[in-house]
Every structure is written in structure tokens, then in C-alpha cells.
Amino acid sequence: MSEERLDEPTTPEELGRTYAAMLGEEAGPIVATNEPATPPPALRVIEAMLFVGGAPLTARRARDILRGLSEVQFDEAIAQLNADYRRQARPYAIVPQGAGWVLTLRPRFHAVVEKLYGGVREARLSTAAVDVLALVAYRQPIVKGDVDAMRGADSGSLLRQLVRRGLIHILPIHGGSARDVAYGTTGRFLEMFGLQSLDDLPRTHDLQQI
Image 1 (cartoon, rainbow, N blue to C red):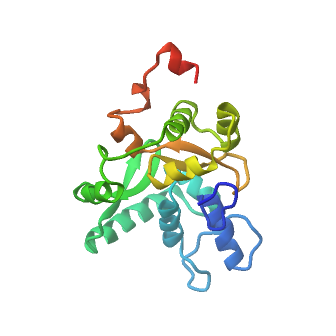
Image 2: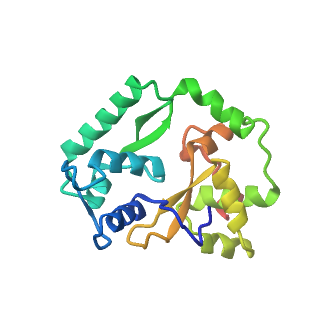
């Protein structure tokens, strides 16, 4: 996935515009409705926004995209999706994170992630990749242009590599277009470096100069 060209929806906001186009409307909020003549239903749009990922999905953010959606309807949708996942024995669930919600694997399936990524101990990063990861960790949310400026070199391929490894993820920029993205670290990043939260990052004089 390239940050310079995002051909598929990579944020809930872009997803909203894509659905609006599918419905023959101008780009903008989707109307939350249960009428079968106006697909897709709000429940599926919320599920798609969670699947796209990025920052935890809040009721306020969902309401910005689904016009007419109430906080109660949002909470009911989260509960309904989780009930469906449990009934269908799905390996994932929607869990609270910060002020919002994220779609993640259930604990019993974490071994699958480790298998796919080769395990935390087996992960190998080049010096350049570690440099980019450190910049993202200490300056997040940070855009590619700022990473490039601080390194004095193009960082596109390294950012994509870190996204694929699940160490950083794409974040929407408030007030920006759907193609304007920033980067932030993930829970896997904390796990790899044995951190409970970003507050545990070393704060030595040298690191503060990053």
C-alpha cells in the first residue's frame, strides 16, 4: 500500500466517500438508514470502518460519516457485531481502546499473528527501518514528508515495510483529504519492545533530539 497513491479506501472518511459514490450521491456523509433500498446498512458500514482500521473508531467519528446515526445506534451496532462474531465463532472481536473501538484478534489467536510475522524474537529490521520507526514513535502522528526531511532521504518503502509488519499504521489527518495520511505505532510495536504504553519510551537526552 502506498501513501502517495491510495487506490482503495484506507480511512473511514475515504470509505464514506466511496459508499456515497456507490449510492450515486455526492461525496459526503452516508445516510444511516435501515431501508433495503439504500445499501449498505449502517451496521455494515460501521463494520467496514473497523476493518479499515487506523485510529480507534468513536461514535462521533462514525456519526460524521453516517448522517443520522445516534450514539445509542452506534453502541447497539458494536454490541450486535460482537454478538454475531461470538455466535459465528469468529477469531476476532471489537474491543475498547482509548476513547473508541478497534477490531482485533481474540487472545487465543495471537499465536497466529506471531506465526505470520515470524515471532517477536525473529523479527529483523534494518538500521534505516529502525530509524524510521523511532521517528514515528517519538513524533507520531507524523507525515511522510516530515520523516523524509528528518532523515534526508525518501522513506516511502520503509514506511510501507513497517506497515506490512504491523509495527506502524496509517492515521487520517483531521481536516485533511482522504489521501492525506500520517503514521503512528501499533500495539505490536509496544509488544516487540516490551512497552506497556508510549509513556514507557526512553526519554534520554539523545532520544529527545530525534
